[in-house]
Image 1 (cartoon, rainbow, N blue to C red):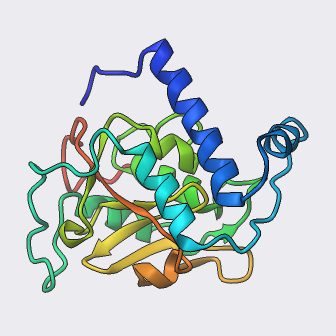
Image 2: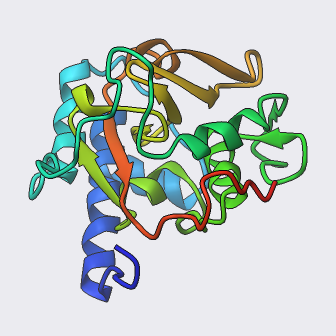
Length: 213
């Protein structure tokens, strides 16, 4: 919620947890992982079984796998209404962005996580940290929800990719340099990889219709 942050020890635990998830999903040794991070490189995943990645993601949320108090998305399975439809409207204004990590915050460019960050900024919400995927996984303003509750404005995320749900089972996101921004099914946009569903529960924007793009 607003005003609540992560303590110093908590940040350390999250950082350590993210590193373990990193080496677990990419199936590299801890030494190889440390060496890769120190060199600023990311080793290619070695065809890790999806169950391994799912276990790593679930471990991050072991203390609270889902938020039972989170209401099911209005119109689930139908109209696609959701908790933060203005985030979807904002994201659609960046649908023409080209994929770039080096120019991720420049007008006309984004990667998957800065695409989400731009949408949050457009509705007056400051995205977490450097607005990378691990920033969203650790953001205290988000609560994990069950996939059956997903609606417009929820986030679909793992350690390597993030998109915005446009409704139950559908989303929009910046994919890669070949495809750029795409819409479609959540499973296709996430490349068939395990993911968690996250709902923004922080301070709501002043107006659902005010998009300061």
